[in-house]
Length: 70
Image (tube, rainbow, N blue to C red; front, side):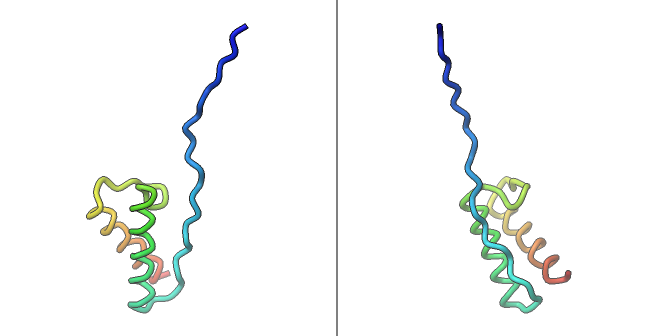
């Protein structure tokens, strides 16, 4: 009897800091920094995977400004 072991390459979910609430320049800047740090650690921002760091920064700015608007 053969016993097969299957190794799954499932990434453990990494705890991500939530974004701060508010619309001040300081808060938006902090949220951008948090999102870019998340990209550097995981290679993704939320569910998207930007191709480069430059695109990740652009996306982080858009997300942070949208959060400030809401």
